[in-house]
Length: 533
Image (cartoon, rainbow, N blue to C red; front, top):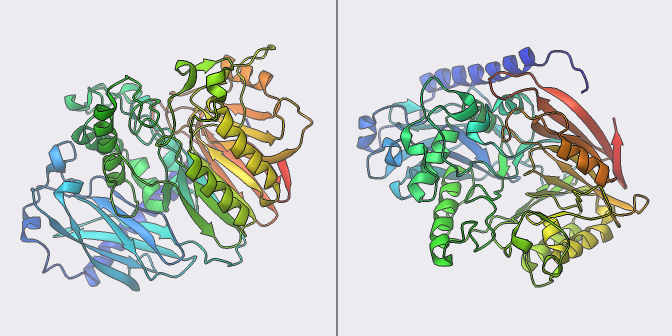
């Protein structure tokens, strides 16, 4: 592990200062520059408590727009968050300064019971590559202040971009201390690559958190209905470090499996439920996901939602956000790590699907950006778990869908000059991989890199390298790093170089762990491959 000066006090201080300053700014601004509350629905006077318990967020930034989000829930563990069953008016403001002396946009939105009183405001008319502050008001209640940022304009020259990359935050597996440190980073956006919630039931003790205040009994069952998924998001958003990370920067999220059910595949339930029954569950899960993320309207229509999308950051970077769950065929060979088979190689088996695959490769091909990033759920590169002559493949990753994997990887290899970089989550470990023309031949051409962020909390405290992790290192010469601590990935981009800093905490079974950079790699633009720093 690379030693750092003790980072914990600095991270704590930065986070505390951000929350304190924005809290003070709210009080001062609303003392002198209140939105007009006279037209707010009269029922807001009867709210039982502060409705902003689940925090605020921003996301999906564009050069002229950003989505700001909140969900009203004065009693978050009650049905509909304890709100009265009718629409409620919410006022919002966006300012170019944290004290709201220069308000650039403001308006009113309606929080409706059918969307669990979530609010998604697509704020337009903003300036490119600018930082903004935002807040909400309902009756006499005022939200915290959030900080967000628009993207650079198309064609704009950009000196530097920084992203935090994270995934996998099982609530009972530990505290979200990594989010505390993300909140202290000055990033342009947070890329969250799936498993925002886990559908599993949670014990009253909160698992490894061993909470003094017990988790209510209704959380002990698995989430499989709309109301139950909503409760799960409310529980996860009870974590103050997660709320702080949302409050500090815009998020660009995508989902993986646990937002619905472990290892589901398209229309196929892991529990082999009838398709018509599983689609009801999937529709509920997708709706609850949209309700709790800073995503644009409209909401999902039934069991379908167009989540893959693209963001351009001037001339420096383009980000392609993938969805590898909604369109895939069932896993081959009954899932798990299995040997090669005709089923694994069947070209008729979809993974991202032909339409999304064309969209991805066409987008990278026509991109004018120096770096082309793929926000991806599961490992795209070939990974063998068997250090002997045999091969074992993960049927739930791209390896389990060999035909589509080959088309995608061959397409990216042809676009080597576009500097493709795959950003991945899922495996609860930090990996760094060279992407090779022939993964079995270490001397073959490298055409890109795959950077895998470890989990926020899933897997508990973890370790440096487990026995399984060592097997991966022994079996895959293109794999340059395995570390199984919890944390996140920080990616910094310039025209000349990408730098990947793997940030980890030593424990998650208690709060306030320090963070350290455990490994760093540089990638030169135009010269793909990982260079240890």
